[in-house]
Length: 209
Image 1 (cartoon, rainbow, N blue to C red):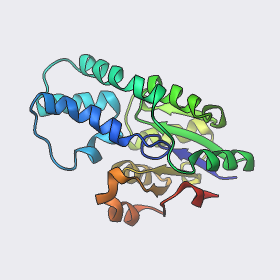
Image 2: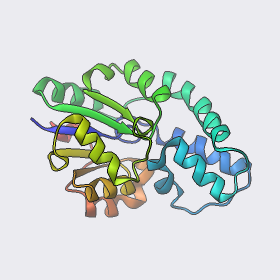
Image 3: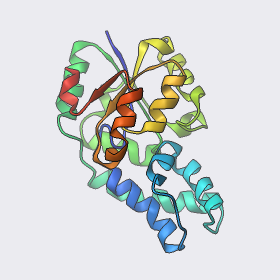
């Protein structure tokens, strides 16, 4: 039996364009300049971490106000429109039937995560569906992977973490997990970096079967 810990955005679902668009629109409307690697920076942080980072960049307002704006803009899209990536549903069902342990750890909040997975018919196939909010930290913190392993009831080294984000993969590996890089068009420019730190790199989910 394999134990998998999946990222959500850009790994299970094709949501990165929507996610990034909503986040960067906040910077754009406030005329805040940002570096070209902004996507790589904010993706592991979740709404709370991103809000704090945006305030550091100069966005006015309180953290909770920014988080509220992010959530409201995202809920509709995830509840109604965000689709799975190619062959994800087929693969998850096959791994479930095989008896593998399937778990999700994402920066997205349950308000967007849960309805999206339920609409896609995937929610009940996972043993655990976690948002970073459940751990009060982000995927930029090595401890979150250790806490997830403890909740799964397995050693960190026996868990395979899958993500499309270089920073999250690097942090999970530093915590002791095996890491599989997952192709997503949003991280095209980091593909070679991701391949270099990954134990395995997959371009299509069906490669897991």
